[in-house]
Amino acid sequence: MRMLHTMIRVGDLQRSLDFYTQVLGMKFLRKSDYPEGRFTNAFVGYDEESKTAVLELTHNWDTKSYDLGNGYGHVAIQVDDAYKTCEEVKKRGGKVTREPGPMKHGNTVIAFVEDPDGYKIEFVQRKEA
Image (cartoon, rainbow, N blue to C red; front, top):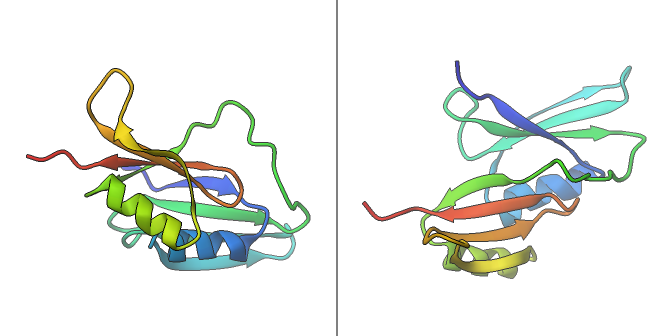
């Protein structure tokens, strides 16, 4: 068994695709429209679906926004340098909600950014071997 993808619902598909590809540097992998169900699924990731887990962005055509609730946590992405990555996100128009630094009660360097729908993305800095 292996993890395939995580699905999140987005209010504006193009805005979300722009964020994940242009701000976070993911690749656009594929998109499928389902007219009878009035929704579109788009997949983005850092590599092909056959090699790694990806994100599924689901856009329900008649829904412009969602209540994120209090059960969702975040998507975590490993980065080489959280400080540099956050600076790049800011340059590309992204929103950093927690500047890089050691996590509470630990020494792993983390940071958080927010996508256009308010979903949190955690950057976890790769530890030196």
